Image (tube, rainbow, N blue to C red; front, side, top):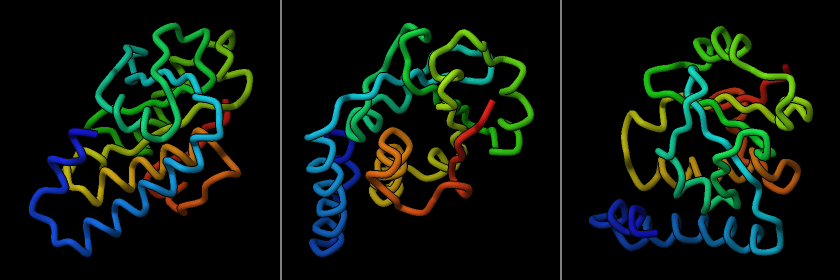
Length: 150
């Protein structure tokens, strides 16, 4: 959690406690769930490891073999949800488990606009909701990310 510790530096104690409490809720719930294999790809289907720590804290694990990924998250800095909706369909492969199970997720680039403790915690919550639907509801689906049905 070192990247989060760095982001927490300088926050007042109340804000730190609030963010830590939000993280603790996610951590406690995922403790009882299986780690979900996730492929994080750009619009050229190139693997990315940029959000690996956030995925791990949300109950996922990076899967390098896309055929074994239960979820595929498309994320590329500078790409909006509209951009991703336009570009992703052409690069999907119907043989992927994630495509067959409608577990394709498009993530907006606003996670990269400001690297703050609040944004990082919010992203971890969103990823927990993506990877464990029904167990978490934080309300950012449709705004910051969407499930994409192929």
